[in-house]
Image 1 (spheres, rainbow, N blue to C red):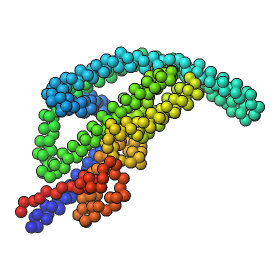
Image 2: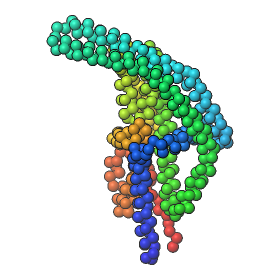
Image 3: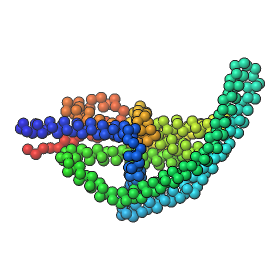
Image 4: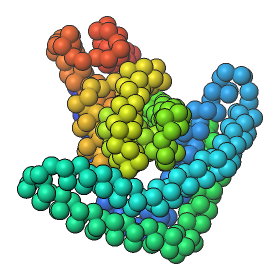
Length: 398
């Protein structure tokens, strides 16, 4: 009897240590991004990129397997061919349009700034006000400095591209190598999963191994649904923005749509970040048009937030705005741009782990339903929430 109590107590404490260790590992990964040397990171970079590619493509592979009952190898072949087709289309249509738009923007920017501020000078000249004149003189002096900076920067961009051509080619080569590795990862997915699972169950008892596998499955569910959904959502928003801007006859529409689509990947802050440079770019063309573009982008973002985003993402986020802000902010501080992208799904995972720990303690005290009615629980009711967080207990053989 005493041995059983000791074993139960040991398992209980060990489970808590495992949960705390998982949280610690995630935080350690974020810290190591600042600590690890560049050389060590470069060694594993192709494998990390390959894993990211394989992870994103696996959802598409499973779609063909489940939807059309195709073999996994055939599904992988179809997905790879589709990706190559998309890359060719982007290379033939998207990249030239983006490069042309960027080149025109850099070339026209000094002249557009001059035109807009000449109009401002004429308007201010009609107003006899000493303070406005001083402000105008200060703005003119600042514009001269800005224009000289833009001119020097524009002339150095080509030089920078030529100097770094080898580095760009090397990066493309690394991406191709990582893509090839990702294909083999997809082919050997079941073998890799089986080996990892065997290692887990070899070094941990069944209860602890079950918990580790459960956390792994939960992580996969959260991250895959979030990133796949966000990629699809941001691509659609970027294309809709491009069509909308071309319909409004806005110059540099490809680069503006690209900015809106890329920044849309960042939850909550992304739309606010993207609308600022987009509006400033159009402002160089026409202040009135910039106002209409600003209004149109805000309407498009509202459509994304209220209709398209929830339809595609569903409940993959499952946290309120406050926690999204915390995830993006802390992730950005710890991990830069990558942290802003992974901060929210990582926070959702930690929230689920902590939520289960709290539910375990409350359930033992008979307080599992405490304050549930006041919790912000998106898209699920009280009963399904309790069922979700209640950890099933295994019956022990007497």
